[in-house]
Image (cartoon, helix red, strand yellow):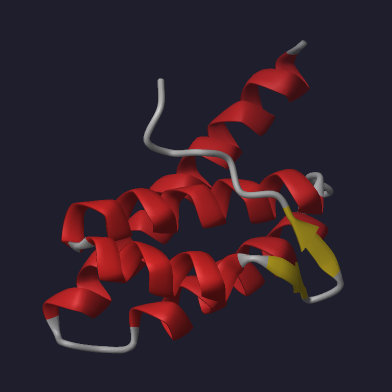
Length: 101
């Protein structure tokens, strides 16, 4: 039970971190698509280190990146969605729809 709670906390942190990476990159007029993909790659690498499910970590990172992109523009959403869709670092990324609750 404790493992699930900390796993959920880790996924929430991954999502928030990925979101911040995209927002901060946009603030300095950087490449948000590369930043989003890098955030997903980092989430996968980190998940492996702490024995967290890499697919869930990748999904959390991609979802966080998309949420941030949604706050920027529809063009940003398209760029980020394209960057985080598919297989990254050997993990199939499952993007969860961030705009519906």
